[in-house]
Image 1 (cartoon, rainbow, N blue to C red):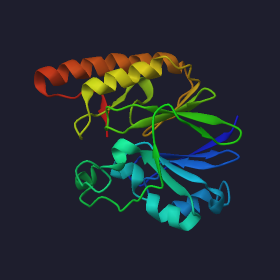
Image 2: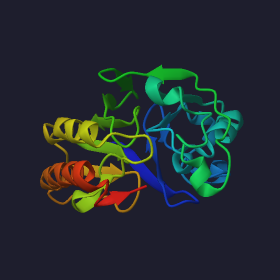
Image 3: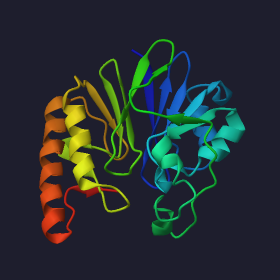
Image 4: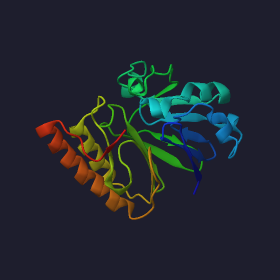
Length: 221
C-alpha cells in the first residue's frame, strides 16, 4: 500500500500527499506547502495537484505550489467553471477574492488516475459543490467535503444541491472502504462502510430539513 501523508492547511482543510510512484497532492488549502512536502519527498517530484472541489480552503495554495514544483493542477470540469467566482469558491466567506487558478486538466467521473503502484477512480459527487469529486482505489477513499467521519456531510448552501448530495453518497455506499480520508477532521479506518451509510442517512435528513425550513444539519464547510 502506498504511503499517505496528511497535511492540515491554514483554514483547517486537509491535504493528502499520496506518495506513489507518480506522487500527487489532493487539495492544497495553504500557501507555502512546498516546505511541508520536503518532509516526505523532493517536492519537484510531485506530478499532480488534484482539487476535490473549488472552495478557497482547498485551493488557496494550488497555483503557488504548481509554479514551485511543476505539478499540473486538475479539477472537475464543473468546478473549473467557478474558479474565478468569489461566492462559488466561498472566498468571500474568508474575506478575500478567489485565488487565480488555471487548471491544466479537467476531470470527469469514471476516469482513473494511474499513479504506478495504485490506481484511483474519479467519482463525481456533486452536492457540496457541482463539481465535487472523490478518489477511490485499493480500499482508500479521499472524500473531499462530500462526507466526513461519524456520518458527517458537506454543507450544500454554497451553490451545492442537497438532493444531489444524497445521490452522490449512495454511490459511495457501494464501495468497500478500508480508510476514509476526508477534507476536514480525522482520518478513520473503523467500520468505514457503516460510517458512510450514516452519512447517507444524515444527508436524507438534511434534504428533508432543507425542503421544509431551509435548514442544513450535520454540515461542515
